[in-house]
Length: 203
Length: 203
DNA sequence: TAGATTGTTAATCGATTAACAATC
DNA sequence: TAGATTGTTAATCGATTAACAATC
Image 1 (cartoon, rainbow over the protein chains, first blue to last red):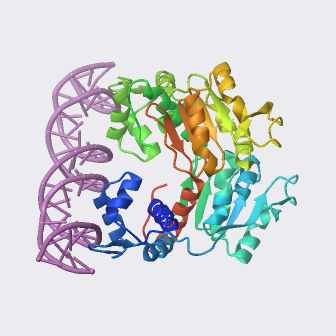
Image 2 (tube, each protein chain N blue to C red):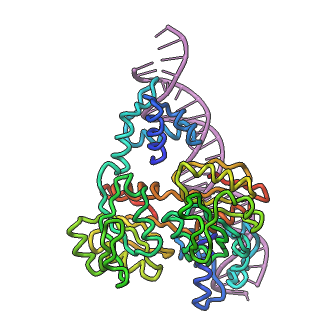
Image 3 (cartoon, rainbow over the protein chains, first blue to last red):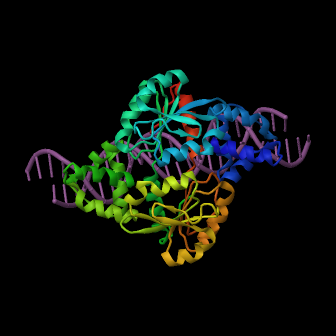
């Protein structure tokens, strides 16, 4: 769905008005029936003989993906990765707002990073209520991850983006997305190694 | 495969000698037949009635995954994300060695980061041959990504880990792994939004 | 009307699970 | 021998693709 949205946005900047399932499929390397099925799942967006009206479909997909609203997010753990993510432009461009930074290290608490002051983790509950935090990005060490996740969830956070290489348990009703860079590296190594024997993987 | 390896390593630190497909499956939330099939694909590692010998299977999996050797890697683009990744401990713990840093910005070239001096990108070819670079991590802006990828590939790099939010084209024989943080965020937002209607996703 | 393209149903394909003979 | 567990074949399930009536 995100990928469809990007193709549509790209087509819009190229000045196109409509796009057919065949065109969308080709640009993403998919089957046209697949595209129609995916889009039809959420509603009747296309018109037979014409295709999909780009100007109608883009806002519809934004709504479906939930990026037409603001998602107040906290970032916990201001190590190297955490600091990099605060400034990552991809976060803001899609309706995400990191509105609070937390850490436990007294050397880091109080610092200003990108216009935000790093707060002590034990003020999380107060700030979560105040700012209406919905998402939390975890850049803490593996050992600390579950504790922070529990804290965040108990304060009403409903989505976690976890960069710690630790398997987290969250209650039903809370979304969890793991970004495990070591795992990605292992997969890259495996792919490179297998290439010698003609095994190819899609990008 | 990576996940099996982690479970095996974790079991080894707990002092276990063998693990059955059922135990492995349970700890990862899979079916036992699935585990046997995955492992059998690479060889006959198990013994009926006993299970899998942990001390034999760990090195075997390491070899299969290719993390039993060194992968000299370059990192291109020393912005916030790039600097964070250089210091990311997950990179070294698995046999990955970032042995060269490159950037085009004259303000960054020449700086020392984590014991390495940032080199000008136009010395890539020379260094690639000298160090035997096999992998490259791209933390450059989206516009620059394809150019850097082409350069790296032409210098013999066989695997790319791309953090730029840009679709890259690489020739067959070269592996590409994209880490698109904005995409991950969109997926998190979608999950959180769908939760209200009882749609649940696996972690 | 003829050509294009949708939404959806039926057919195909692949992947997951169950079952079981072989083996420790 | 009896219990446990493998590797693998057969059965099931779900997802992808093809086909087509409906519609612009």
